[in-house]
Amino acid sequence: MKKQPKIAMSEWMELLESTLVVNPDVVPEGFMRTEQLAQLIGKSKSVAFKKIQLLILRGKVECKKFRVSNGKYVRSERHYRIKK
Image 1 (cartoon, rainbow, N blue to C red):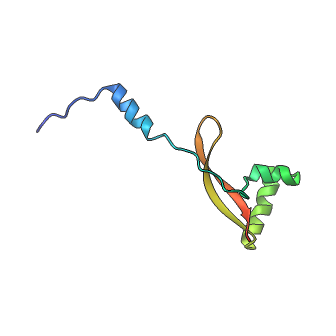
Image 2: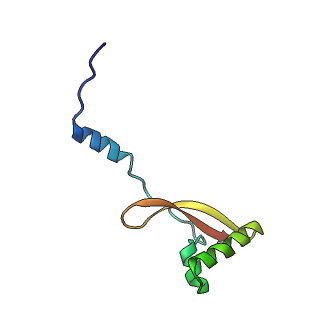
Image 3: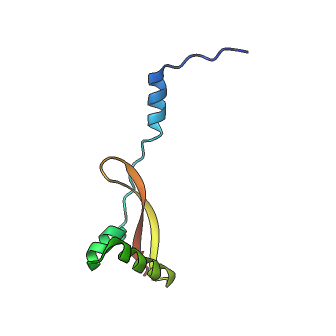
């Protein structure tokens, strides 16, 4: 068997970290997160979420996930928009 070349720890770190680089999505106009909708209606996040879920079941609201940045990292979050 052939020996594989040794890879330095710094090379591993660089390679592994490169997989974590994710650019946030541009959220289209009209989509809002649960927190934003809760503020809009003056209710808690959990109450707003329940109302949103009911509207989704009734076919009045659509849900899509977008990658957004919170300053430290990028993560996927649900956004909602009224169906037209």
